[in-house]
Image 1: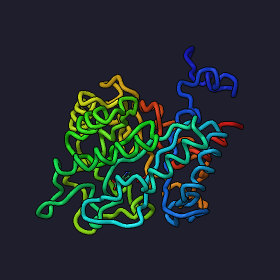
Image 2: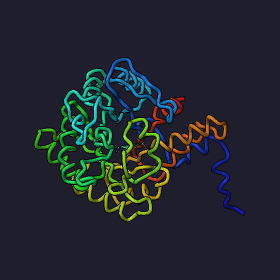
Image 3: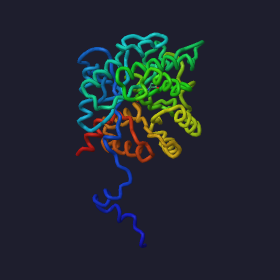
Image 4: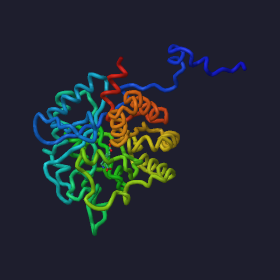
Length: 321
Ligand code: PBG
């Protein structure tokens, strides 16, 4: 027996030298929830360690992330009121718009992404405008573009449409350019599955659909070729980066999209994936830190360049040691 793979596992120094994948705080985009008010930091019960912030406290959180070398955040808004067409989503004094301006004023070096979608802003909780009980694709595009422009105006570096309407990347790109925001980028949630793993998020963002589900616009978990189609459409429509979401049940999809596409690829380690680790850790069933790091490295190894993760702060702190 002359080939002994264990030689390369013998000591920490050897293992360090031959490790194939590295994780860095620079890989992370931290998702943050904002609502109106001042001095707010309300814990989210289903996501231990995560909070709903007001624009002032979210700015503090962003600074803390920055001090841990996390370069970017993505903001989700809880508006003061909802209506059938989500008009608060594109208000200049909307909560995300305010939070973006405050962050850009006090921590301009941090990259700010904003989620572009209507589910948090509509009273029915669907990601678009309803016509005869169904989400109307083309009517929704107009509102999404208005929302994207208002985020760009507030100073967002990238807008991130998560609604899964057809043609939204092209529509948003066109309208951003028309309005003079050619520097604002688009991170498209190109491959977004209709997933049970979004459960805790819908509580955190108060965005659960009031009837039905999102299967008419989000993807069927059984499909992989469709992911490649969605990814290439968004590349053609002008996305700067694309995303696969969720991450863990879709590592094969991350790899296949990575192999097909030359844009930076992000993966969203979603709320349910976070909550499961936290819950098992609380019960003493797993070593939470170890599973967190294993989760993140697996997403990177599968081919993601960037990871949207609620673990950003904790993992960045561990990586520093
Ligand atoms: C909004 C949106 C959702 C998530 C990100 N953007 C929820 C959904 O589609 O129902 C989920 C993120 C998470 O679970 O962490 N459309």
